Length: 171
Image 1 (cartoon, helix red, strand yellow):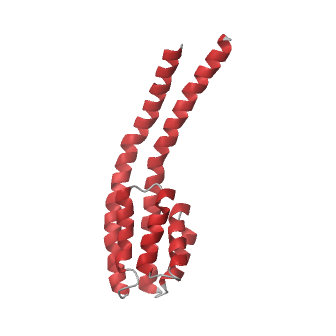
Image 2 (tube, helix red, strand yellow):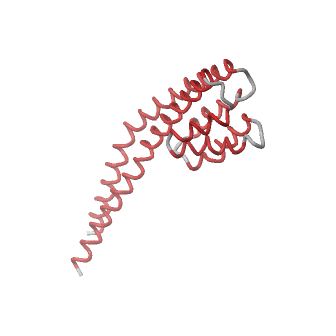
Image 3 (cartoon, one colour):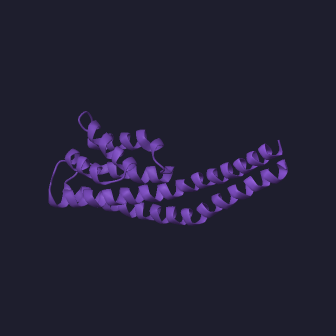
C-alpha cells in the first residue's frame, strides 16, 4: 500500500511539472507565430512590389511557406475573398481563427491593422500599410520575447515547486 502511495505522489509531481512545461510553451509558440506573420508580411510586400499578382493568389503562395496557424489565416482569407472584399475577408479570418492561435488581443489588433487598406489602394499604398503593420508587429515580437524570457522559467519552476509542495503535504 505504501508503494502505491509513493508511486501516486511521484506521478502527481511529474504531472504538475509537465503542466508547467506545457503552459510555458505558449510563450514560445506566440513568439514563433509572430515571427511567421512577420515573414509572411515580408513575402506579401515583395510579391506586391515585384509581381503585381492578385491578393488571393499571393495569399495562397504565402500559406504554403509559413507555419500552420498563420497559414490558416491566409487560406481562410483567400476563401472569403471570393465572396467579400479583401479588407473584410482578412479581418473576418483573423477574428475567426484567433482562438486557434497563440496570439494575444494586442497581437490580433496589430494583425487586423493590415486589412485597413487591403485591396483598396494601389500597390504603394498597400506596401506602406504592410510596413506600418510590420513596425507594430516588431514591437509585439520584442514584447513576446521578453515575456518568454521572464515567464517560461517562472512557469516551469513554479509548477515544480507546487508539485513538490503537494507531495510534501500528502506525505
